[in-house]
Image (cartoon, rainbow, N blue to C red; front, side, top):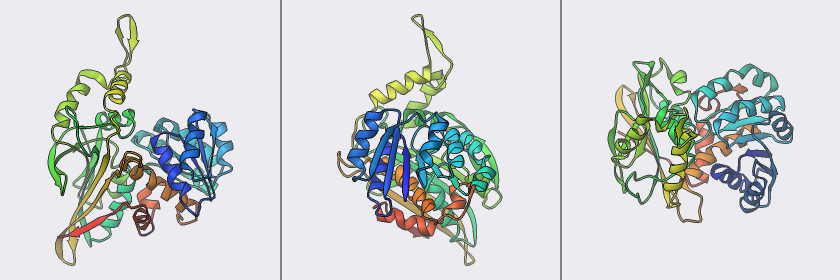
Amino acid sequence: MKIAVIGAGLMGRAAVYDLGNNPAVSEVGLFDINENLAHSVATQYGSGKAKSAKFDAGDEAAAEEIFEAYDSAISCVTYKFNPGLTKAAIKSKCHFMDLGGNNDVVKEQLSMHDEAKEAGVVVIPDCGLAPGMVSVLAMDGLTRFDKPESLRIRVGGLPQSPRPPLNYQMVFSAEGLINEYWEPCVILENGAKKRVEPMTEVELLEFDGIGKLEAFYTSGGTSTLPETLGGKIDFLDYKTIRYPGHCQLFKPMLEIGLASRQEIEVAGQKVEPRALLKAVLDKKLTFNDLDMVLVRLTFEGEKAGEFKTLVYEIVDRQQSPEALTAMMRTTSFPATIIACMAAGGEITELGCVPQEVAVKPELFIPELKKRNIHLTITES
């Protein structure tokens, strides 16, 4: 099978690495606006299977031409390009996955369901970590109950050795981080959708060997789960994990307007506060220290006439400065797994569909294990 990757950033290079090491993949195409970067990443990470070319992700006609040569394509660029890339994939009859991260963009993609189904392809948005992997794990856990009642999802990408004052380092795009901290969040309460404010409802939690942490509401992590599970379980929410105190320090920066896109005048020049914040985050919080990703899904419900609690947990640590980061692995590998499943005929759904509907957990979870992403399950 042949798989195209759009974007040669951190997530794109991890996707190329995984696809290059997959015996079932015969060719990987890497396309980026920076031709030299694409060539360098393809050479370094593609295991001799990758080729590269310059490509503007906003050029739908060029995307359509590229996708015609591939069985599946993965978007590893910012979510604003995904609707156009989805249209191009449908026209070229190429399966399409992306890393998502914005609920409005996903809704626009899902509105193209009929066109994708008629073209005989599957389009699956939000195939990264969260949204993404956690939705597939969620469906696996819920099936283990006779009557599932609640699901609480907690996910975080953190430095293994935190640096004050924020005890955080950039492990993915600053735009994505701000979006999570700023946009409204959707949960289920009494089986119905409810909007809650981001960076609220801070709770404390612990992971063995790591210690005390905090978690708070952020946007996008539940993706389409509230629609899929509405009326089927009583409660669903998603919170991001950080070291204690992070929310209290970061939230005021957003509250005074640093997430705003409305330009203000500074020394005679128009400046977008959000662009400034992104630049500062990238410069001041990029340490390249070893990272880790924490995932915990807590299910509650009835099983065999008894009330049970089921906990799914993943702790993935970057092993060395030269290795892929944990965030790269846990974000990109789910997308590559799903892209290969689609190309190999293991996904039978057609159209634009959520990952929790299209992806079979019994096929997906063993693929995580092959990549040393280990899921532990405990029941009480």
